Length: 195
Image (tube, rainbow, N blue to C red; front, side, top):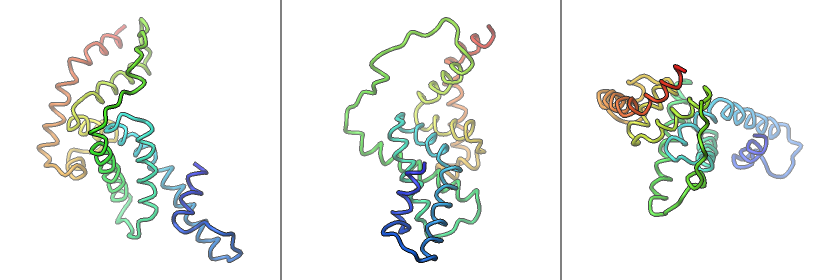
């Protein structure tokens, strides 16, 4: 992430021609420290949230960089760490939805979809976790969003409602319906765990 922080420092005014001015050096160090904090704290969350919408690692990485730059350039201070985290997740969701809208007219096929790998006879625990996540990712967006934010990010129904701009009852319904859709697909995973 060293390259990213140098890029972020330049974009926010911390880069440019070398200067011996101590205040400029202090400002650059402050920007780099804030960039490092944002990357360490939120990069994984932004990538995971973006990936739930986009199903593309490269697009999720692009969204992550954009969101981190927006957070770094934000002039207003956050009320709390929770407010900052909610803002970053909301911006990531909006950016992912915007990208989906822009891409809706384009037909693409992921390389992963072209060649099918033969599954091993017995799945490892890691493979089972991936299988569950794949099934979650295959859900319709409203169910996937609610299940991901609740089970993977640890948000309560009330918090999810605020993040996705829906009522608490709508989020609870989405969670319930999403679980119902997952239940039949996860029966096979349960049998693998019993072996």
